[in-house]
Image (cartoon, rainbow, N blue to C red; front, side):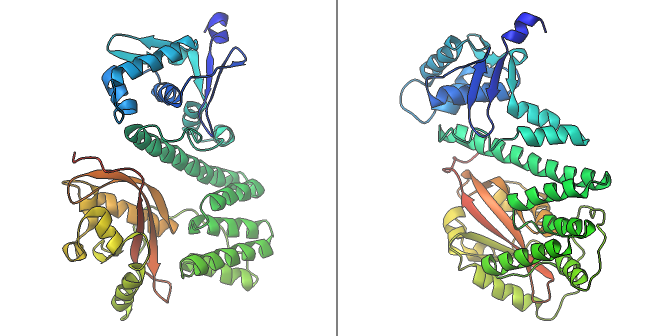
Length: 387
């Protein structure tokens, strides 16, 4: 790139807020939709977008001519001196004249060594377009998914850094990475166990025991549950004065199922009845994925009565023709990590769909055995007509 082109590069910050600058001066855009449009085009990395689709994305829910609103917004971006390449039917931003922090984080997260991952973590200043506010239903859906996707990659970066630090003989830095995982999701049992083991490895046994105590107190207060078998075993060894070794991560897959106790079925049924009293949409399944609990809020949210879904697998929530694989994968993650949370597009009985924030957790009996999984679901957007 020539010196002239380097001087004309626009810097766009989208993480933790919105800011745009060029040649050392800040650039202000007229409206929030101008900022939303600029961010959408910038994250496309030079891909051309049809004008009608852009208009529908950002102005499809308001009266008036969406194409005219798009033209006005594009004029505002062009007048601000940004690298807009507009044609009659489509438009794009020149990626060679832009630096975008979110794209740089994505690129760095493809690395498998400590320096790029550390750089990515340092660049991530908060959720994507955190201060933007509601724009339009279609755009808000897109932004919700992008936020969750980027946030999930940061969690994975912390996990990889943890392993790389430990392998490099830097347990104190691994402790910092594990602490960030715990702070981001206090229910993540895998991260708690890693943190306990790392503290023990550094000779900080009281800190390791304190982590277990804090985790156990959180589960009892918020979920009425106890830590899993692995966490309990680490805690027992620490109390007895042993230093448990940190082991390699287990392979992916459903955990081996413990032999069923005679009271497991009754316990699962009773637990499902209790969970159905929660003031959120709740679905409870056994380990084979068959629905055993479906509360009134699930009925209101998805349109199916309890008698219609008991004994079925929840594949129907993932769209017409969906199989059990999507639901099974989330069950695996919930059982492996102690909790799974993310954004999904789920379908209603009438064929409409919307984005939901869904959290899934394993359900354990009094002996600590996993006997089922329950999910709490909250809609994030308005229903979209059947696809």
